[in-house]
Length: 122
Image (cartoon, helix red, strand yellow):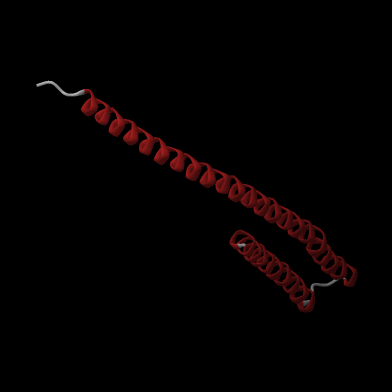
């Protein structure tokens, strides 16, 4: 069976159109992939900034605990020695200082989590 030249050209034209459609879909997929990759880079950068901020806040909290918390405990211990006896009140003050330091850490961590959540959701 002989296929006419026109039929052969039609077959080639159809194949070329299918190839062009496939190329168009590939181009669209590449563009979409590029957009998704760019968004991922932006998201990673935002996450890195959030982690850096969280680390900074935690360092600040640790520094405050080391200085203010230690100072409060040291003052209580010094006062106890100065008076020369163990006072229930001094023990209570030390306990309160420790509780305040613990609450400060808890509220700081809570604030970091809230800041990180709001930063990541923006």
